[in-house]
Image (cartoon, rainbow over all chains, first blue to last red; front, side):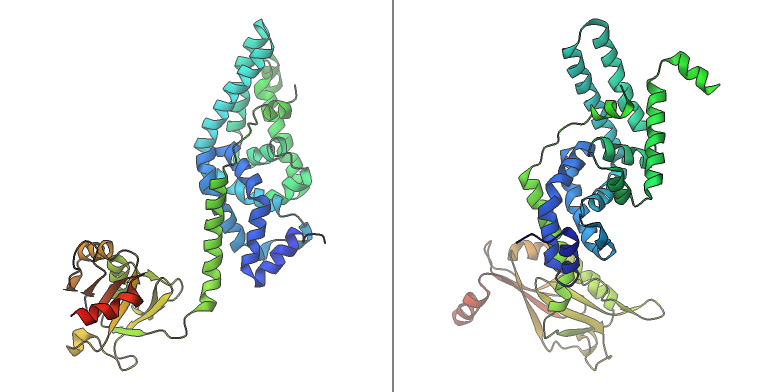
Length: 187
Length: 178
């Protein structure tokens, strides 16, 4: 017997609210990790219950043609995270230090020094992205969602997702390129 | 290296604490129960009459720990609260303007014609909260492990608070011993 799809479970939960608990059982661990990566474990714990409470209240609005509820849940989580930008920035900087250390361990001399400078800049550039671009970029790069899933999560047309990701890429590239080249481009 | 690959390198594995998951589930199930609950309203809802419904509701919430039932408020065009439901555990009571259905507040009538008994988890803690909120005590709790006390609300309705576990068993004993 195949298990019912998320869409079927959510449909059932309209008349039988307790059924929504199954959506939690299926996806809460993934979402808790997602929130933890972005805002830290302590904030994530508070947010995961809130995320599913909001999802439960809005379940009528879930588009049953989507099958999996995961992108939709990521979208609610992304919105919740906007209120926690400061914690997210702190976490990004800590990640940058760790990434730099890892890179430095593997390389030597000048390359290691480059990594020490590079990753804080990457973190700074991600942090400086507008909320909507950062949300799209991190769903794509960290959560490995497809363009289609990012579009579902953020409730945007796929073309808008593509242009947001392109803008985010361009901004990162600009911040990471050698100074001379950047000056040339801006003239 | 491409920007997205660089961003990827900042991805950290986050812990998934099972206790945190349980607490999140508890929060969700509480929200679900709230939605289911209205359909399971008790068959009987006692109604208490007051001169000032708004003041009564806020006192019952503040002093006795009742919760106002969401969306139960009935206000007049002038914004005055005419009726609301308050709940405690699985019990619900209506708080309404006196005279609307014949009944009057003890404050106007000068007499109490009934009292309400409420089962609580911790009688002494409940008593201290009521006292701090300015409730007039009708019958003090006896001792540190008291199993009941009684208090008046601002309009003179009498409320009896009884220990949850002892309610059925101990009340008859208590009467016999008096």
